[in-house]
Length: 358
Ligand code: ADP
Ligand code: MG
Image (cartoon, rainbow, N blue to C red):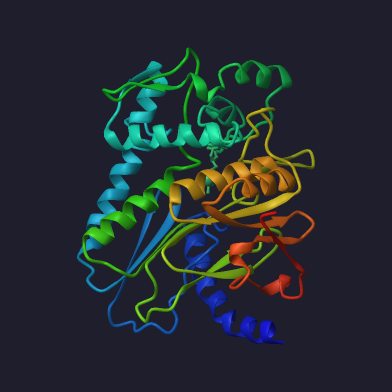
């Protein structure tokens, strides 16, 4: 009963999420941003928003207080995108991939270094060197195709994050034929950097929606937590909502970017162990934690792992919570979300299984 009442209260969140969905639809990515921070009940007087299209995503930044910092935020996004893009021929990553290595700036170095730690932590479910395979499937260009088994086997010989090194003077080196792609972590890192910039500029309350990556800075101006909607990965609308203060909420889902050929759907997240798009029991994974980078890396890699392995991974960790939605429409949440998670929409009556540390 109490839970039902709570669901009604949270229904307003869906409205906020839907407006973001509409916005992103205009830019040609109707299903990309799917979680939204809602700001209902906050005075709109000091609320300032900008929409930026970057990193192939519609980004919506909303700050409470002064809006002076928004142009700096936009500049920061542009400069990170310029360095990190795998397709922009003037980016640092592009140069590294063309030349088998080279000097990079501090941002790129930091992100590569931290990503490699996460590749290791996830046992290679995250692998920033999976790019030759991602590219062969056409996921970065939109020229989709199903590579032959022989082609995948050949390309997998270039996939090994252990062979990526960075020296003290910011020089990256790759093994011959390797190429790296920070697409699985760039938005999370950008969210962290933006949150840092806003904090330095005196902003205590903000929501940064970077297309599926939400960074909630502080609490709402009235001190209450932000409500973040989690999109239904199997249909329309919202599957649920959580409440957070000062957290990143990052979702990876098979529905974000995919193509179909001969009745088979191929999704944009690749299992580096096989070279094939992930096709397991998960429809989406949302990861909630203090850093966007970690959440982004883990949402991608837990999606690769599948439900059982992802649950084991969570049990061995202490720095995040997660919402798993399976292809069968079941919802699993980790125990830290038990108090605030509410199923919504098609999932309103769904059983929610709480995963606990043993
Ligand atoms: P999105 O950026 O679309 O929200 P993700 O954060 O899950 O989604 O990142 C997916 C992107 O990361 C893919 O488009 C591809 O470029 C790259 N990628 C795919 N599979 C992997 C993987 N196993 N490890 C690292 N990067 C991957
Ligand atoms: Mg990711």
